Image (cartoon, rainbow, N blue to C red; front, side, top):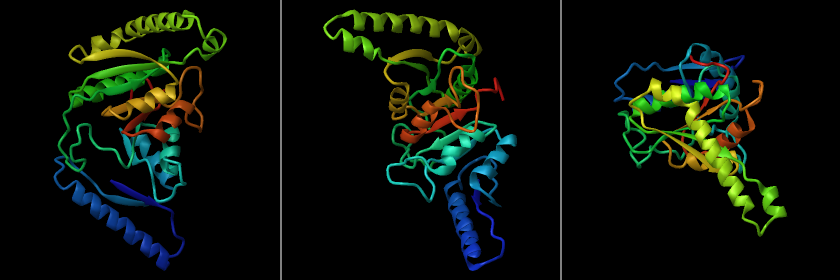
Length: 264
């Protein structure tokens, strides 16, 4: 557990107040985790929060941050640290909305694992960059004893509806594409079923905007797992548009996986 803050050149009253605040936050964390059976260390660090955490990601398995910090603008759900960190982290980052509660309504302060029927959702396309997303989603589903739902979104053919509003060709074509994509997706995860034979894995192709589809899934999923960028994109300092959109609107925990790493 770490609190990060900007460095102070001199030990001014403001700096002391900031340090006291950091220690108070760590005291709260100690209380929340008092029954946690594993090893926990508590520390503070000076520097840009996103920069400090990004540096720590080089030797971490996972980073977990809240979606909102102390700042923020009206209507903007994602804080600056949560927005910047997933694009720079070298390990998966979990962003947890403030209002997020474990599926089923259990107390989020309980340290015992929560067992519910809610799935872990992996949002994927058909590119190779989906592989690390699937691997980590399956590992977490196995640990949580939860089903894994592999989800992809198929954008609607709005131009067909515009030009042919009275024809059934739109719906027929959309369902045919959906059926074909479902079959392709099923075949593309054969290797995952072989690796996790006891895991309940289902495939779902939803019609709609990818950001809307994935955001809706965060309402009921225990965890939604995404990649940093989708098909054909090169990793840069900016997070992929779909991942950023989902993070900004998510109502449950979202894990963002660096997709250039096949396995960590």
